[in-house]
Image (tube, rainbow, N blue to C red; front, side, top):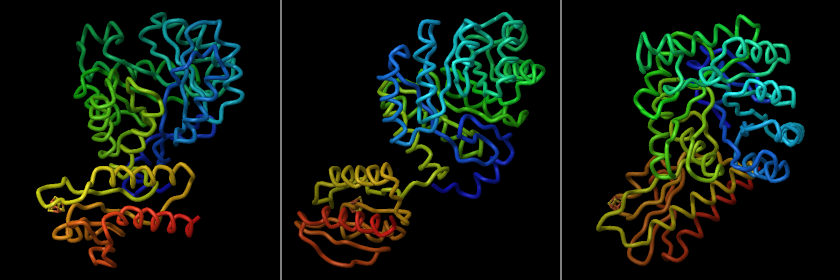
Length: 367
Ligand code: SF4
């Protein structure tokens, strides 16, 4: 896993904290989070899902702690999870204390929905005493009332609220903090994170709340999270989707790869197709992407930057000149090329298989 220098430089500005075995901030690789959609009270099913998510590249897992009844199972999950566990707490400070005492590596709370600041201080003291991480989650629906009356529901009010909650935690010697600022308005979410990063060195958790189903959710998250990462803002991300958490992890990986924050193997580039396309390009692109995802999941990372799957030999090799390896279609045949230069001509039905074989060979040689 490689992190480009630009990110290293910018992220050096944020404070580094440790959540279980995962380092967050201060130039550490941007970590991927997801949330179990299992019943936390069912430890076995939850652990099985965590194992699957870990295999896909998830770094940190969060589970809902909706009531005290789930705490025994939550304790078992914390003890057996291969990933650091964060307890997701709403409203009840006793659940935050229970989750910390059950062995969570961290908790996520929104002080705005716990309301009573003395209870917030109790959580801060306990987290500080145990050396656990707290994510302070601020959203436009639960701002500090005084700040909201002064500044309205604005990015500035989100930042002010987050900073005032952080001060409370730091006063209680709880310093392993990270912050998220979310609104269902994409522009407001991005603006709030940007302003917060200007005023604080605390690591930022990025995500777009209520992002939606696969298509809309990935699009909104890619714009929101991606635009911040491109500015060097953000230390850990979650792509919230109304879909299986496995999809969230895959989408997060794609976003990190697209902005160059994490490189786990070559990027697949393909042309948009046009009237010159005489081969069935779409399944070929999907097959190459699948193969690379499979190799990445096995920890086999190719040394290449780009693999190209292009529709025609006329423009394909030239347009994808920077690809380490590629194929370009023709009428019933196609070519295999390296950095724009044809290596051989193949019948169409051998084109994809030859490319996949070359990819596997390179991965085995490296491994
Ligand atoms: S590479 Fe060829 S098929 Fe693909 S869009 Fe360009 S001209 Fe069309």
